[in-house]
Amino acid sequence: MQQRTVEAAELPEIMLAELREAVGEEWVFVEENERDQFRDPYWHHNDRRYDSQAVVQPRTTEEVQRIVALANTYGVPIWTSSQGRNNGYGGPSPRVKGSILLNLRRMSRVLEINRELAYAVVEPGVRWLDLHQALEESGNGDLMVSVPDLGWGSVIGNSLDNGFTYLPQAADFGAPCGMEVVLADGELLRTGMGAIPDNKSWHLYKRGLGPVLDPLFMQSNFGVVTRMGVWLMRRPEAYAPLFLTVPRDEQLETAIDTLRDLRMDGVIRGLPVIQNTLTLASHFPEILGKFQGAAGTMPDGDIQKLADETGVGRWGMRTALWGDRPVVEHQLRRIREAWAAVTGGEVRSERIYARDEWGEITEFVEKVQAGIPSLDMLEAIPENMGHIGFSPVVPLVGNDVREVVDLLEEIVTTRSGTNFAAGIIPINERACVIVSGVNFDVTDEEEVQRAYQIAKEMVLEAGKRGYGEYRAHIDFMDLAAEQYSFNGHAYRRFVQGIKDAVDPKGILSPGRHGIWPSSMRPAE
Image (cartoon, rainbow, N blue to C red; front, side, top):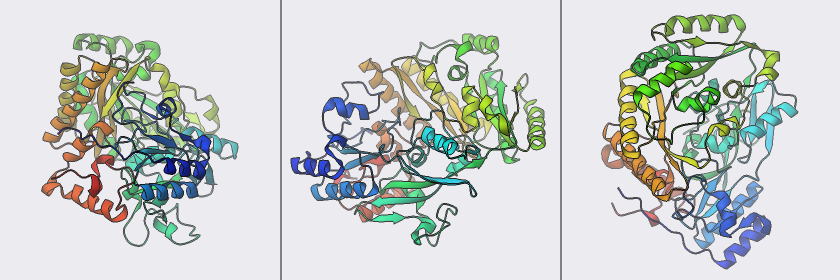
């Protein structure tokens, strides 16, 4: 399936003037060099298929409503991003060329921190770094927010795109609760209990009366989320970061099945991540060097030698334990006993931190699993290296994981001539996402385009085996959505019916994850 080229109507001068009036002239950007600050850095510079016509940065919900009203009036679509750090998936770039990029970085207030019930309410411009800082400065530093590997992303934006974090609330995206949304007609909606004015349970209860709406605004184009509740976690008495090794590649199935049982028993909570040797360079640059995913393919024997010499294994799993110290110590014993099934595998626990020792946590991985956001991982990525991601959802069963890992590795190594980089993230006790993709030199146009084609092949080949992407790069959103084909694409027809009902002019992020308004829909 070839990606369609779709372009928006030209931005009228009168609309541009009204946008400037709505948010202030200094917050509307139209020159190419200005707009280039709001595109995926992994695009090749000459690739202009997904450029915007203008970037607009509102400060308030009312300004968002005004921008949506203008889009309806003049028929120019808008594409929403929060921080726009979705690198490797298209970043903030719009699916429809010439869209107005609605960037919400200026909406950066932490609106509430509730210590007693351990939650916060944030606007879309709030980064993980910002929320952590707000907790510290307000005397609530003992409340932990579940963070991803890089702290520069938006709490709301990451959550709405099903992004991964690592504390227990991360399981099945459990932290978000209660949203405020600007709809395509400019109306303001509050989900769940927030539909009752001044309801005190808005950010405490994930449902309400009638259908649950919050998930409708995740990976969709039905509205613009302008605030959201996020659950926090109280700092535990004890915190033990762990690293578990899998010495040989053929032991991966045993490791997966062992992990599943530990997850099912509640011994391992949160989101562990299992990564292959070369991917682990982002965590152990002092012994593995910079990330080698874009280098020429390394022979299996050389990878095994590197795994043995460094002690990181062919696969390594990072996870952590949180709780009362006797519970943590007991869980650690359970993990050691279970991991003995992985012959030669190690369970490394360097230290158990007490509640008052958070200031002594310095290592990147240990910080992330303690709810301390950072940008340390960027230091391990070589200059000019980009990536395009493909990450299917797979049962948390050793044989199934092995099948998909082998499939993706063969495609990457034979088609691109680069090393295979992969991480396996159990999103709950029963399923995992295999995070993979293709790495490339962003300055080499031919190499970049080849990477896109290889990623599309991965989508197709995984789809033939019944596996689907959990979030898609904008260059193959349609292709990824095409794999969800049960009953003549009943799912797609249903969500497009919702799109036509709530956004009849199709002005909110058309084409996002394959959801097109009727005016832009290709003939069946």
